[in-house]
Amino acid sequence: MSLNILIAEDEEITLKHLKYALESDGYAVTGVNNGIDAFNKLEKEEFDILIADIKMPGMDGITLLGKVKESYPGTDVIIVTGFGSIESAVEAMKKGASDYLTKPFNLDELGLKIKKIQEKKSLQKENIALKVSLGIGRDYPFIAKSKVMKRVIEIINSIMNSGCNVLLTGESGAGKGLVAKLIHYTGPRKEKPFLAVNCAIFTEELLASELFGHERGAFTGAVVAKQGLIEIANSGTLFLDEIAEMSTSLQAKLLKVIEDKEFLRVGGTRSIKVDVRFITATNQNINTLVSDGKFREDLFYRLNVMDIHIPPLRERRGDILPLSIHFLEKHSKKINKKISDFNKEAMDMLMSYNFPGNVRELENIIERAVILEKTSLIQPESLPQSIKLFQVETITSKKIKTIDELNKEYAEKVLEFVEDNKSKAADLLGISRTSLWRILKK
Picture 1 (cartoon, rainbow, N blue to C red):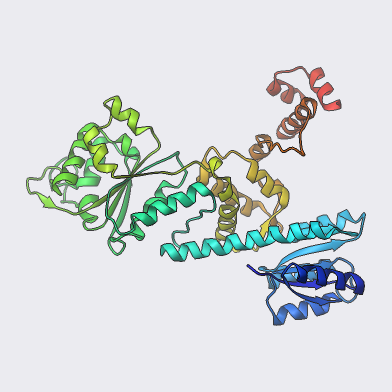
Picture 2: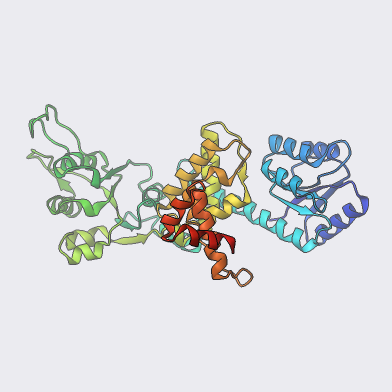
């Protein structure tokens, strides 16, 4: 992916130097020496990145940044500020700048920042292309940047022309329902009905009625005959979520539907013929349930023609950024807010969080942040305190911390979590106030 870069820099030598270096790296580069000319260029041509000096005649970099974010939110902005003007850089980041550089800057550092933006833009385009290739459009966006989720896509593609039954496994909130929709809408039954039911939310009697329907007078309150989901889904797909919660007697009836392609309504005597594809899902270890006699082995083999495991979000961290961008766009649009991106610290917090609630939790976090946020970027303050408290420390060869440093950092996070209540913090940490004071003083 080649980038079109615009540079706004009033120092002629710096401008020439930058232009030459970036063109040597293969980028298309346009240079101007003031903010007004830069904005005029943006009105006539599309640029991927704007590199703007913070101090320029006519229109300064901060003003230019604001106008660009308002009129051309797809253009990423890198602000260049003088040495010691870190406050200006912070202001620029809050107003939507993707990154900043301080003079005198290193060209290698600039190159890394541009590549980071390039990777983000490539990611966004890949997601759009993926939606188109899977034929799922806007209603079923499927984000898969990580290696493990790309493997899931490969499996979905391999069964695209098959109507086989599929068993989905994985933790709650990992995205099993979305995968079920993808399998249906990319398969041979995509023009036919897709229906879904969660087996865990019904009693045995109600679930039987939901699935098989009932005849008039079958039970108290059954004043009219009712079609069940299996009947309505005829020629299409029925997604049974939390299948392991189904009673063994209902499992036997479901097995008969799969084997004989017919069933009886509750209270009925007439067989109804159906042709339904079943996609089922569970967050339990179904092999153990089969071994323990809690799930019918014959039904398991009928449902498990193809099994797909959806890994938890903590095992596919490469999906956190694109998922976050998708949910940001979705919920910003929903409440008509112009929030273009995440503050770097906020994104770092998301990237290091463990997400016990998986993708569902991530969406809830982003939706909450969008509601609370008052700037054009999601700030750390708009994220739940629990994320800050339980941040996972990433260890690299360049960033090894001593035990004292880790103790102090964790104690500070706990103290922040309890709003500076030292007694409460000491209780949570299981130490005395004096010990807490010593840790914080180190």
